[in-house]
Image (cartoon, rainbow, N blue to C red; front, side):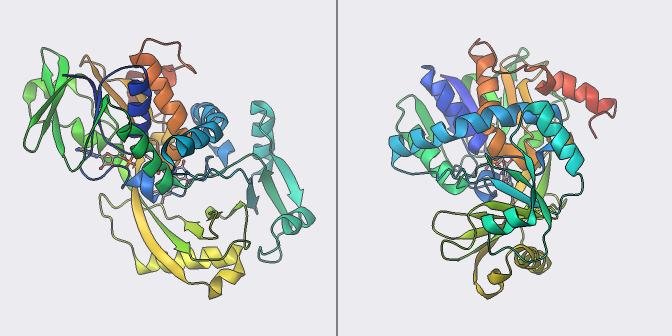
Length: 379
Ligand SMILES: Cc1cc2nc3c(=O)[nH]c(=O)nc-3n(C[C@H](O)[C@H](O)[C@H](O)COP(=O)(O)OP(=O)(O)OC[C@H]3O[C@@H](n4cnc5c(N)ncnc54)[C@H](O)[C@@H]3O)c2cc1C
């Protein structure tokens, strides 16, 4: 029997598996598809919330910890696996921000490097930005990560650990519970036993806690996590057109090392529908060209979408599932799962391994968050 069984192999599940394995535990990670082919693959990889001052302090706390950790993690993964997740530390330029005063107040409160910059700074930093931008907010320390490569390197690093078992294309149907304690999971064709079960199933997490078993039904909470589709595109540009993450009116461009430029993203509530649409493509193209007019003449290489694990206020649920012993969750990171992943997974592992937590775990715990939701305080 394994010490830990993790349901879901996105960045959250994989980073959890890696940390637990490094503590000496035997870990199984199960995914209904391949590892890192859902939201963690589809995302843009900005290592910051967009307009970070608009989020709750719980997001800032996790994001700050992760931002300090990412450069070393990327280096370590590149050395360990030969796959470089391409962490870039170029900064983020936010054009035409309406709530600049809030941004400055937030930066002062949390001691974040963030400044108001003028037209001269904008065009001397990124010469190809569309004309007419007078002012911006600049965060020089924000980075980005090439998330599909992050996923590949995490997967390889797990494959290199003898105490990790990876099961792909195995659909977990339900949690097995005996005498109020999780003892494993039921898959379509088998039973997997484990000492502790951890749900890291992204947008699908709430479904795993749904059961028709009347006894269990009363014990398992109804989770407010729902899929929120995001569509993105990539342009096959040459290096040099843009070097930093640039945002305008909620949309952004993200440069990769090889010159490719991502543009994102839409925010759509349409259940588990993973279709891309012509309307979104047009609208993303318009947003991309409003930032970098030269993209008009550059081919779009690919257009895709992913399902974010949407949660109230975007604050993830991290910790024990009350009522069922040995069942835990780390899900609901919404628009920020890539930036939050190192801190969110470390925080859960601290609890599982009896370590001092990196930050106060209370605001992320299920009982407290569900109480807030019931009181209507999270929306
Ligand atoms: C377009 C877009 C842009 C984004 N941009 C950014 C960004 O710039 N920065 C940022 O920080 N975040 C970004 N995000 C958000 C980020 O991608 C997510 O918050 C994060 O990837 C969530 O990680 P996860 O591991 O929880 O979920 P996922 O990556 O979705 O992984 C969940 C895994 O669970 C598996 N699973 C589900 N149900 C079962 C089951 N029953 N049995 C077995 N396996 C199961 C799935 O197959 C999947 O592999 C973006 C997301 C999108 C869609």
